[in-house]
Amino acid sequence: MITASAVLISTGHAFASKDLEQDIITLTSAQFAGRKTATQGAQLAAEFVSERFTSLGYTVDEQSFTYQSGFFGKATGRNIIASQNSRCENCKKVIFTAHYDHLGQKGSRLYPGANDNASGVAALLYLAEHFAQSTQPYQLVFVATDAEENGLHGSEYLVSTLNKDEIKLNINLDMLVVNPRKPRIYAFLDKQSLAQYQTDIKTLSDEQLTFMATSSSARLNRLFDLKVDWRRASDHYSFAKAGIPYIYFGIGHDKHHHQSTDTAAHIDFTLFEYAIAKIALFIEKLPS
Image (tube, rainbow, N blue to C red; front, side, top):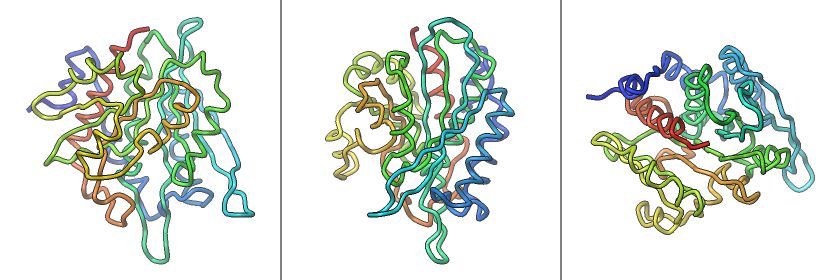
């Protein structure tokens, strides 16, 4: 079997994967209480992610924002932004996003959110570690967004602070736990990005894992027997509305979605790591 490490070694790079499983275990622990926005659990999650980025040598900033919560209330969220020191002038930015918030705790029932979206945050940290010392023809920015579950508020605020002319691409990571019985990653793109990147995404497929690229919600919904507007399904929608190219990587449908059963016990970490390694290969081939 080809391992994720072997995939990266073939390109002259190697992942330091020791933290991948532990990151998900930590984010889904009872201490983090389901990471509901504006709770102590979410604060602990934000601090954890910030410390991990700092340990990787990134410049880390916190972006606080407020949004309407209910008819009369307001809530405060926190985005955590990790930036590379730019190695070239006038580089465009590739902005990675993954929301760290989840549903929290309802009564005695904990919603750990392993796939949704501790998996995306772990992947974000994993990719940040891989690219920490690399030189790319663009600047990489890694953002752990808050308040996605409440209406994409973190990514909305993030995009409002950006100059879209400086952005090459948004890569949104949300629900990446591959189902071993149907090992597939879906890439949902805007039409322009589909034309540009579809071939490169398809070439990631092999006998262990299939990558499918599409800009059609109808096509995905036929596969899952769902009625979902995938363009609006996660934080990439905030970029889409601003006319910024995006790619949303995820598995599409998970029977544990928004259930208390969304735990780390359901994760095949070897396959999960393999999927992230493949995404890293795609990023390395992005043209300037």
